[in-house]
Image 1 (cartoon, rainbow, N blue to C red):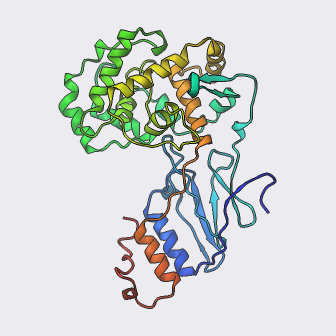
Image 2 (image 1 turned 135 degrees about the vertical axis):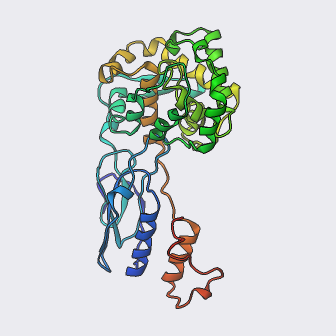
Image 3 (image 1 turned 45 degrees about the horizontal axis):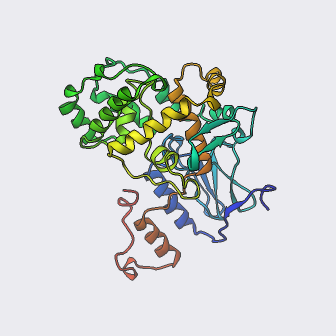
Length: 353
């Protein structure tokens, strides 16, 4: 039986052949596993097969997926337990561990939103502490070496720490277009202290960069935030546009669609600015700043909301690619020839590509 009060996600009583286990683990070796660190897979039949830690990936910030692979004959061991979305096995059942920081510690409650979108995050200090082991903390702590008023291609590198989708098109866009951007025209002051005209300038800047090839609002703000850490919030596609601005969340699962609309960007910035300034939160920010004194209010809100978001909506397990699932099915059926399948299983070199 599982841990008392734990709700199993799924139970699977299938038994795997050693060859199938080997193919499955080979698939893991070839693909980056994003999420909790997968140290080893142990097969009860067919010996032991390990996945190198370097191939297991790290716990990502934005959109990171825990790598949980289920089956009574395969045991997944994680480097750390009691982290959001980590999986723990209890007698052939997979359950989601309740992170230690999710307990309500103290009476500091953060109020976000108004009306039908109002949310209260209880025990905000404990939620904030849950961010301290997230890779996003490296992103927040990194200090760019380029001028504060210059956008350079190298600025894309740090965004990888928060799972950005930066690619060569974004690199080329900065090379070709960044010289036309004058960041000195954007105020270097905290978002909570800006007036409407200053916030309009921020929206215009974000919308312009988001319109470049290879960019969207999410990547644009991840680059610009490092230039104005107190002013430009990170507008994550899922956490902000899909959940924070969505009155139907969490009953309605967040979407990860890219955003380019200046109006939607303005809605997000105005909502975040509002949540930094209400009387309900006046005594909350100093308490959170004691835990992370070097972070701006924009960053503190981002940290608390991200942990709350991922704790409320864990990432769904990632299924193997269709080609690999076909190969597994073919082997499971015991076929002696790949011609029994329409296209046959993929070659070893094709698995995981």
